[in-house]
Length: 147
Image (cartoon, rainbow, N blue to C red; front, side, top):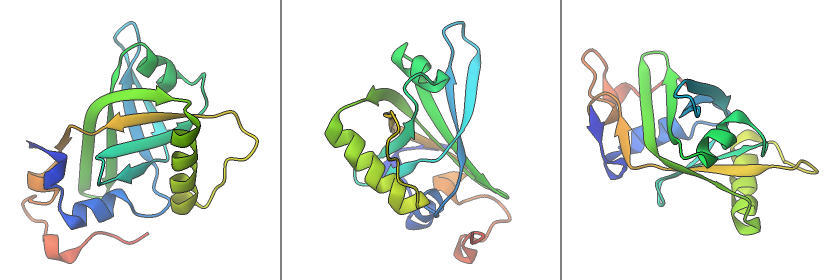
């Protein structure tokens, strides 16, 4: 079921921000084939924004620069959630600094001396069980597996 990111429950946001989780980012190549990459990311609920620090020449960056939208897919056991929206690439120093700080806080890794850029996914809709957590047989009060 699709829904607006402002409808994400606190439990769903916690699911999206668990420390050190790797998810997949799907973009589309110029010839229409999908490209899926394992990524570390941060999610800013206030801005409904995903940030992915990556190498400038990566396939995902080339796809986004060519106009591809993006889908971030996070799965943990039977829990899953997709964040969908337009993507952009930024080399702006303020954006890079913000993304580096958020990434270091979540993953414990500092990007020093690396030439990197930021893919930003402006989340416009979410796809998952009803509001992220209404799946039959799943008790939303039970939380999710801890990492």
